[in-house]
Image 1 (tube, chains in turn orange, brown):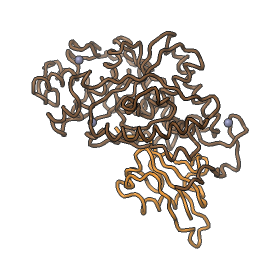
Image 2 (cartoon, protein in one colour):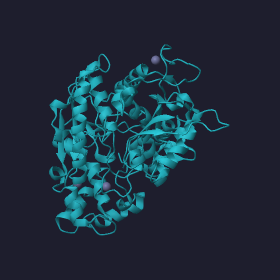
Image 3 (cartoon, chains in turn cyan, red):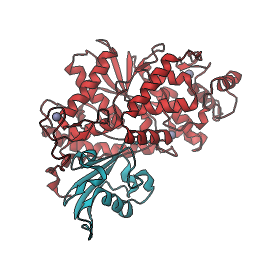
Image 4 (tube, helix red, strand yellow):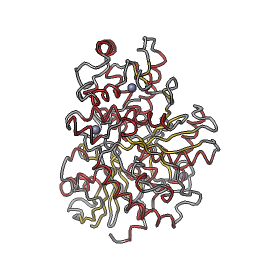
Length: 100
Length: 407
Ligand SMILES: [Zn+2]
Ligand SMILES: [Zn+2]
Ligand SMILES: [Zn+2]
């Protein structure tokens, strides 16, 4: 499944300073019928974040203060971790904890 | 990247629920303040009009006043937005017009000034710290953004929203203090520089505003910033600061009052506001939205207090406003004798001591004793300084990180 991920507000520094990532994630495994934001975050942590993962995640969600938009829409409206992702979705992560 | 991203397919949410304000369009965000699910259009309106209410209810401005909008260097967040008319501001100046809070503030202020006829003479004030790395990187981004901006200028974003600029004035550390940060670091080394960063930064806007003879300085401090400061001041037991930090206007006794029109505005909304204004995502994704931090800062991310605020917000978004409220209530109920707020004998900046911190540090630099004012060494404030520290628990400036919020 193809997704576009964008990191902003300093988060790009955690993934080699690359802001936009066009990625291919494995489609849902057997037993799971959808690929959710929760799975995506785990995938990002393993595959994209190169340093200081604690700046991006806390537990299995994003760190509080990181804004998530799925196709231009606040992820709080689409169910946060339970948001189901589909082919060609665009997910934006922006840290509001800008530097000191 | 291929250009198919211009068309955005919205996620299903809340069973196809509609905006709770207009009941017509699909919601795009959840307001932390009210938990309402609202659409982009209603979001602009409530966001802007709430700030207007704050301005009117608190009588922040009078017609004819000359107002500087401060882009404080404290956040090191380069975020150039598109709505300033770039052609009226030279590249070099634009570099400093960089922070998300102050940029949104500038935009909203000029929009409201026009819409509601405040009659204010607005301009942007920014400070050149004289940090080389910082500047060069940013300049590159400015150039890139400028090209994108002119392209965008040809698209109409949203009917009535025209792009126009505010005059921008830049004052340098050299103008204000006689030293650039680079020169300071050359002398004192990297280890102690954030003492200078913090102290100089805190005064830079006020000194700049005084230099430009403005009536008031407005800053982009938002509700999250203020809640954080309340919390820190409670933890430090700093009653004097606690009483000041929730005031929407401060420094009325000094030369230039400062005010904070975003006092009740959540950071989440400030960050999301330009995103939504700029969406089309196709454009947003090409806008350079990157952060640079004070390259001398060992830890540019905020400390635990900020983290704690964000944790609270996730559990209960109202918590931010509640903390501000408790800070306000505290002020009303306190009868503790406050340390006197005097002014610095040298520069006139508000100071509870004979000389303000910046003047102490500068005196050290100029006399070739750069460690003066850092830590325990004896400065011109001598014993008085130590007494103050013991009596009101003011934290030693050495332990302050660059970017610590102070109002
Ligand atoms: Zn609406
Ligand atoms: Zn610093
Ligand atoms: Zn002074």
